[in-house]
Length: 243
View 1 (cartoon, rainbow, N blue to C red):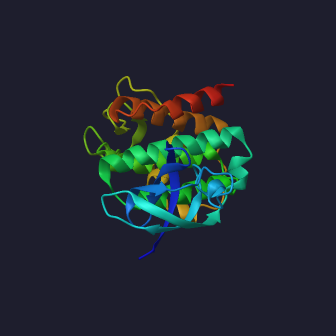
View 2: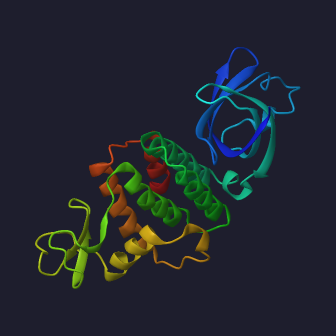
């Protein structure tokens, strides 16, 4: 029986002369492997539909815990905006690798929804670094290293928050502040907003470049210190951003 699943191709591997094996992050079943027979042939109608980042409905002979077999694909969205810009492609590549790695550690299906909502917002033209940072923050609990953004991480005080610190993992109040890096009041507020906001509800992002950079610096430092994820796609993205 053919099963219809919604998903996005996150990787592809050649298999024999004319076939390939793809990994699809799906809404229904999480991360699954799929054998695509004959799709590397120039005559195959599925040749262009079985490449990385294809987002659509996949019709499969689904086999739990085994390789499923692809029958057909209906594209939902081709992400034209992203695919026309090398920097946006770099963001997409990083978020795809990050999401895949987080899923492998937690196997939480909500990651699929967060990921798709995020890349849709980037495709709509919203600031890709802000959306990336929002996803990075939302993924932290699934990695077991969530932030404390409701009170001072050192004493529990909910008032007089003066900064947040990547080394200790959250807010620091006036009483506990010693030699931590001071960030702007706006950064303190927006980090919490990033953490809790529903991505689908975002319509506009008017944030100064200074604040965006400050937030990104904090998140990069926190990921390096606590997540154990050192992704090549992140290194490449950082190089692109420094050009």
